[in-house]
Image (cartoon, rainbow, N blue to C red; front, side, top):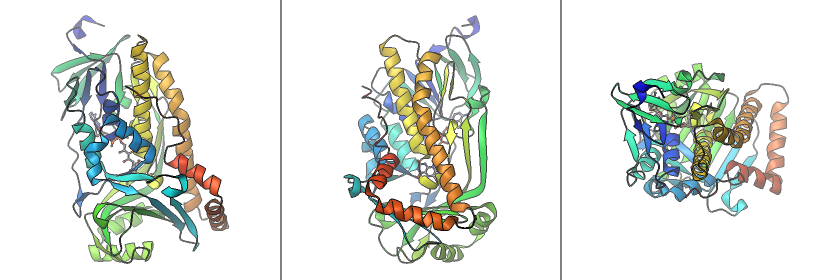
Length: 405
Ligand SMILES: Cc1cc2nc3c(=O)[nH]c(=O)nc-3n(C[C@H](O)[C@H](O)[C@H](O)COP(=O)(O)OP(=O)(O)OC[C@H]3O[C@@H](n4cnc5c(N)ncnc54)[C@H](O)[C@@H]3O)c2cc1C
């Protein structure tokens, strides 16, 4: 390391981005004696909609188990809504598929959690670990890559160096850019409208997804009988829906969703997010690993984005712990490639699946709707295939990192 960086505080790990995925990594390493610095830019406002954060995530059962193992789940479960059933149908066919947690012997398929609740829970769970430092709001103002370490300057003042820096700074990752890592990108030309709504009937823990030519509409169960919607639409149509007053929006929503929960009678504040898919060309390079949206972003139609990121975090944590146990340099390519090799199959299959689903449901190819309807009926009636799909979707069929502690 050059002389000029020698005075930097030496830590074991630097995490850039204290969102849901960066904090999952820190939680996975909690209590193991790691000295970690998390740099979080901050500044994102929580948008409340009927008293709930309008950004919510469906956390699949496999990841709920992992969050429980870190102790973080205790901090967020009070506001989490169990998901016990999922119903999917399209706008061309009366039939659809219903997935029940009981079909695979589970009490729930996952939980719906507000993003801010998830992030706060993960952060609170770190409080007992004095080795983990939360720097927020803060930004890296200089970075230097050495052969055996990476050094950073935070807000022009504090200097840190570590064997490894992890990019968990989201889809527009600053760190990924600094490292000169390119991405494959696809803009869907769509926006996802999110809001909390109040249906007349209780959801009883069921999520509903209606696929339409213009994009899917998801109605996700939340605490207190409320639902959170994610309504994907082509940009122009989404802008039109956003510009409507609440009464006109509710009319459009009721028409699109139908009477499954009775009328939707109230809608809170709405927000819209552009929908893209992207995947980095390199998940790792010497002294750097990318996790979460910094590495891959997917269409929210299956609600798997943060779930994939959490699995990145847990697998990386396991590799880091193993490397330290065997006196290996955990920022070296040997260790980082082990993380990459374990994660690529899952990432590629989920991304491929999302692309396939998106095309299948938005394509206007003649006859495709018949194929879709037949496919849904076949899956719905084929017990073992359906169960396999459900176990995959809940993350329960994936290799779970061995106990980290
Ligand atoms: C409409 C919609 C609905 C979705 N629903 C679901 C769902 O139900 N289930 C699911 O699994 N996924 C869902 N997703 C995807 C999910 O939101 C993302 O995958 C998830 O937010 C990624 O988490 P992350 O921590 O990797 O990145 P982010 O959530 O983007 O967090 C990145 C963090 O890094 C910080 N940061 C950024 N730049 C810097 C910097 N230079 N320095 C320091 N800090 C920085 C940011 O402030 C932020 O806190 C949805 C996405 C959308 C758009």
